Picture 1 (tube, protein in one colour):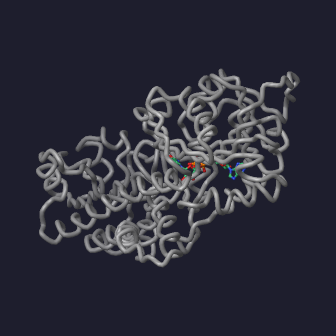
Picture 2 (cartoon, rainbow, N blue to C red; picture 1 turned 90 degrees about the vertical axis):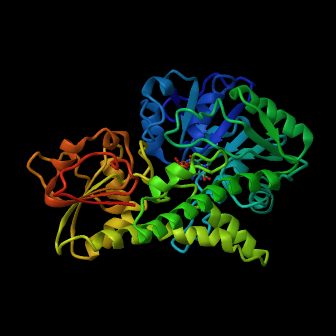
Amino acid sequence: MKNLTQKKDDSRSFTPYVAVVGLGYVGLPLAIALSKFHKVIGLDTDENRVKELTNGFDRTGEFISSEITNMELRLTSKPYDICLSKIFIIAVPTPVDKDNKPDLSSLRSASETVGTQMRKGSIIVYESTVWPGVTEDICAPILQETSGLKAGVDFFLGYSPERVNPGDKEHTIDKITKIVSAQTPEICNTLSKLYGQITKSKIHVSPNIRTAEAAKVIENAQRDINIAFINEIAQICQKLEISVYEVLEAAETKWNFLKFKPGLVGGHCIGVDPYYLAYRARELGYDPSVLLTGRKINDGMGKYISDQILHLLEPESNILILGLTFKEDVSDLRNSQVEDIIKYLESSGHTVSVSDPHASQEEAMELYGIKLNNKINEDDKFDCVLCCVGHSEYRKMNGKSIAGLLKKRGLLADIKGIWRNIRLDESYRRWTL
Ligand SMILES: NC(=O)c1ccc[n+]([C@@H]2O[C@H](COP(=O)([O-])OP(=O)(O)OC[C@H]3O[C@@H](n4cnc5c(N)ncnc54)[C@H](O)[C@@H]3O)[C@@H](O)[C@H]2O)c1
C-alpha cells in the first residue's frame, strides 16, 4: 500500500483509477476488494487515518496489517490525487446532529471534492446511506456546479448502498448481494460488472437511484422498529416479573417468529438512518409515527435501564460498567448509548468506572471524556457490576471471576442477558433486562 503524499504515482498510465472517497468501515473494505481488479486510489480527509493505513494499522479493527499492506492500493488525503479516476465511489458519514436532523456536510464536501477533480465521462457512485432523492437532488447539483458539467449528459450518477456490518466476519463484502442503480442502463451495466467482480453473491439492479436509496434506509429502519418492539416487550416483562429472554427463547421456537434481542441501539446506522427517512417523510407532509416511535423507545433505553438499576443501589455506590462500544466485539464507539447510562448514574451521585477491551482509550476520551479502566486490580471491588455490551470476553466470565469484582451483597446487572445461566452465591443481588 502506498501513500501518494509520500510517493507520487510515477506510472501515470492511461488506465484510469477507481477512487474511493472516505476510508472508514465502508470505504476501506471496498477499496481493498476493488484493488484486486483495478487501480484504486483511496482518499480520506483524515490525515491520521491515511497515515495509519499506510503503516498497516486499521483502527476499526476490521483488517490486520498484512491485509492492508499487501494490496496495490494508493492512499491520499490530497483531493487532486484522485483526478486520474473515472469512477468515484463516495462512502462518507451521514450522521444526525444533536436534534436528530440529518447532517449532510460530509456528503456535500465529498461531492465538492469529486466535482473539482472529475471530468467528462466520469461516473460518481454514492454508497453512503441517505434518504431517497439525496443523490439526484442534493449531490448532483453540487457536482454540476463544481465541475461545470451536466449530470446524465457529461457525467453519470450511481447509487449502490453498502450492507457490511462492523465486526461481522460472516457477511463480508465478498458475500453480500449488492444493490446497484444508475442514471442509465449502460452505466448500471458498468457498475454491475464492477461490483460483480468483488462479490460472489448476486447483483440486484434497482430500476432507479431513489429505489436503491429507499431500500437501504428501510433495511435499517426495519431493524430499529423490530428491536424497539422487543425493548417494549422487555419493559412489560419487567412489570410482569418474568424474564424477556425466557419469553423470547420460548417464542423463537415458532418458525416465523423474528429473532431480535432487547438492548441499547447505537452506532452509525440503525439508530440514525430512520431519522433520515423520517425527515424526508415529514418534508413530504407524512407523519412517520411508527419510525419515530421506534426511535423514541430505543433512544429511551439508557434512561429506562438506569432507572431500574438506580432503584437497587445504595447512595454513592461505585459501579463498574463493562462495555462502551455500540455493540459486541467491535471497536466502534459512535453513538454508544452506554454514555446515557453513565450520565444518569453519575448525575445520581454514583461513581462510575468504565472498562472495554475493544474500545480505544484515545477515542473514548475524545468522544465522551471517559478514561477507560482496563486494568482492574484484584482488590478492586464494586457495589455494582453492570454489563452493557456482550463482548466475547465477558461471555467467557464465570461465577468466580464475576464475584471477584463484587462487594458483599453487590449487584450484578446484565443488560444483554449473557450471565443469566451463571450460578452466583445468593448473597449477591441480580438484575437482568
Ligand atoms: N459502518 C457500517 O457498517 C455501515 C454499513 C452500511 C452503510 N454505512 C453507511 O456508509 C457511510 C459511511 O459510513 P462509515 O461507517 O464507513 O463511516 P466512517 O466514519 O467509518 O468513515 C468515513 C470516512 O470518511 C472520511 N471523510 C469524511 N468526510 C470526507 C470527505 N469530505 N472526503 C473524504 N473523506 C471524508 C472520514 O474521515 C472517515 O474516515 C455512512 O453513510 C453509513 O451510514 C455504514
